[in-house]
Amino acid sequence: MAWACVLIAGILEVFWSFSLKASEGFTKLGPSAATIVFMILSFVVLAQGMKSLPLGTAYAVWTGIGAVGSALAGILILGESASILRVSGIAAIVVGIVCLKLAH
Image 1 (cartoon, rainbow, N blue to C red):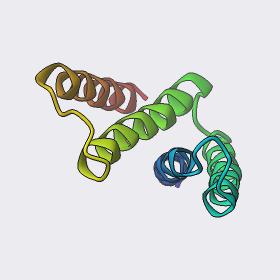
Image 2: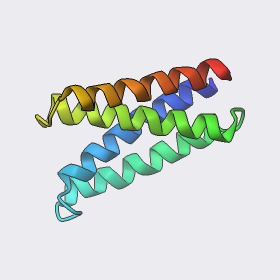
Image 3: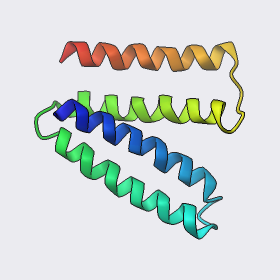
Image 4: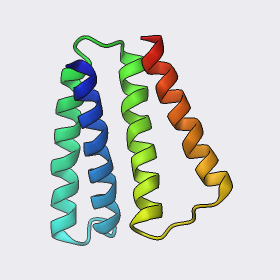
């Protein structure tokens, strides 16, 4: 259950980062409110997962999921660059997340 919480919290992190981009520096009310709600939800769910997981592992996996998800959202939804170097970096983060999960 703890890993499910970390996964859900990571997905919520993707939603808040995407909303943050859409808020245009907190100048748009709807996306700004969504950013705050998703941030709070992400932290609350992460805190539940951290009850039984090591701090470093849970936090690193959470941020990794958020980083990879946000980068993929940027590429797939916002048309950001998908260069070989960028995709390689995303793949390296995924490998790191998997290693942390397996090490637990």
